[in-house]
Length: 230
Ligand code: DX5
Ligand code: ZN
Image 1 (cartoon, rainbow, N blue to C red):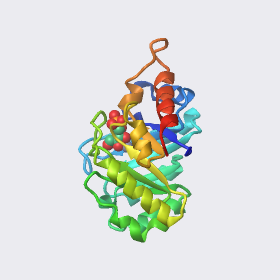
Image 2 (cartoon, rainbow, N blue to C red; image 1 turned 120 degrees about the horizontal axis):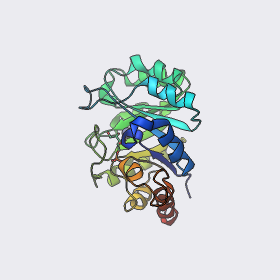
Image 3 (cartoon, protein in one colour; image 1 turned 90 degrees about the horizontal axis):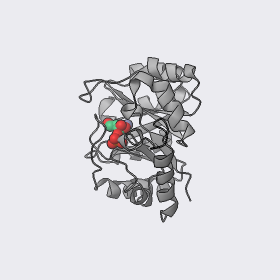
Image 4 (cartoon, rainbow, N blue to C red; image 1 turned 45 degrees about the vertical axis):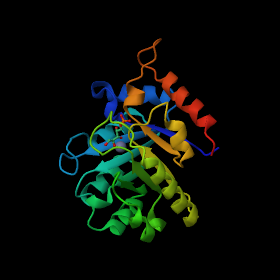
């Protein structure tokens, strides 16, 4: 079985107690913290920046932090996120004038670099930069908001991306973001994803016994993933 990673998106967490929320979700078995950065320009919403990433590190978070940049321009903010403790930094190709340079900038800062593809964006750009990509993120909703429904066409795109990764012979993660739930994570894994962002499905599902634990939803994800034929 692939080394599946579950990456809760803190976009749906309670921001008034963010450190505690992140601690709880990691204690419940999540692998990676997905960190959505929105600028009210590239996407019509505004969220959090490097200060908050740094605050999570200072709070004691040691898990990988997966910074998903939905900002334009991209380059100016990358060193700040690297200094703030980002592990992965991904960006949308539409948001950078010089994609190859941005990928090099991320890796040069010591982070894992990745490209994010909106539902209607083809994967063509990967062809010439695949040697500089550590992670491919496919959006299964249009970026900007949590709680939207999974776009089924993304399953075909996952298969296409998995083929590209195989052909490259490189160790590249294939991440999916948007509308991931317990009832669809298995088919998403079967289509080729190995890293799963889930916001509303995780932070909207507090366990009955303890309002601050996410054990049951993370466990349900793992059970579904264990059944995936991959
Ligand atoms: C949307 C963000 C997602 C979002 C996913 O632009 O990139 O990470 O938080 O939320 P859900 O899992 O609720 O679709
Ligand atoms: Zn995201």
